[in-house]
Length: 535
Ligand code: ADP
Image 1 (cartoon, rainbow, N blue to C red):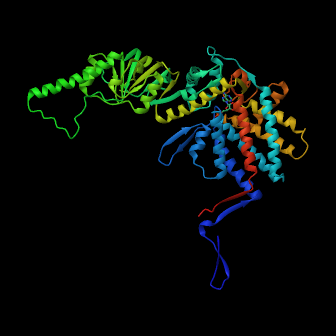
Image 2 (cartoon, rainbow, N blue to C red):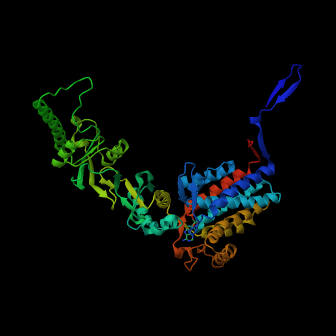
């Protein structure tokens, strides 16, 4: 907008078309925001739990992702609405902090918004609702601590950890193979964990995948993998106690520069040149052997003659290894990257307990496994699967399992899953509501109702009657004063989640409630939405 004056000095306003904004204010804004948040949450609701549905998402360039992971679905949905973006952010923060529970947190936030809408319609001020929610979330989080249990595990007793990872994986597409994957994830985390300091650096766990084979062939490698093979088929496929020369210099004689000319006009001259070349190769191989290398890893290629010589002199070699991988090998094996043969010394060699080449089934694919490296406890989870989509989804599921194992090592408190923790919190919040005088009481009640929506969604997704199932379980919890009753999604025959071994980490569940409350409070406090108009 701009103010201007005409030739007689009369003011007029120039409206630029681009500057027109749409604006929603007051209760209208809150309602529109709540509707947007609910819409996002409704999409994820059907994906919750072991019987949750999967989603297929297609990116603008045609890539297809099939997933059940809340954070991934939202990430790829490419939403436009500001509030929907907040929900995406919510799921992302749960993923970042905890790694699991990304669907649950959005379902919870959606339920809180739905309840807030009802309260707004009854004329309760948004700030009062927000305050009530805050109080209720405190009660719920305290109740979680109250019903949580410590559980013991150690480097030798990893069964409980495996069990928790299996709960996480049971709601994913890969659940057919959940025990195997859970065991791999736990072993990987234990391998890199510092149990004394209760710290796990997940960066030390590399998750790689290669199309082919079965999901069951997924394996844990105590070292690193390189997508390369030995340069000559007759070189040994397995080297124990390898001493590795890591070279960035080419295995070839120096080339004449363009401005020089080599004239070969007689057979003798050619012979001499050939012998010279051979001597070069010979010296290079000898140099490597002299320092004690039993394997050469080279950034550059070398020709057939050098390759043959290396094979003859019994010095296995790998060529065309990329710079990044070369660095990784150097770090893991404690070696140094050597740019010139003259600089090769025994101290610069990397060490690994075992280097082996592995070929895969009928395909000609080969990979190099460098295991039990001297300097690093880094491990690799190597995923196999029928197609790229499966491998990507497995990577995401393993990420969740790794995060759960890490969280348990940091804090070994657990609460039971299947909605049992939410039901218990709902009972606690409802009971506490009476103590609060004032309008906030309504918001606290509403919070309790919202907590119920997680077990309801679980029941609904498993084909059970949501309201009947929930009320039955809730009354059972109250009657027996036992917070372990939840929704029997898999029709096992008991709804005692302790017997079913369905549990989740305490910090994960607490985070879900806290994050969902925070976002909903934020949405409720917005009373003006100004956005560019749509045309
Ligand atoms: P998220 O992305 O939030 O982890 P999931 O789709 O993995 O969502 O579902 C997790 C929910 O499913 C949790 O509430 C968990 O307690 C519940 N759950 C997982 N396995 C079972 C089971 N076997 N029986 C009942 N509930 C389960």
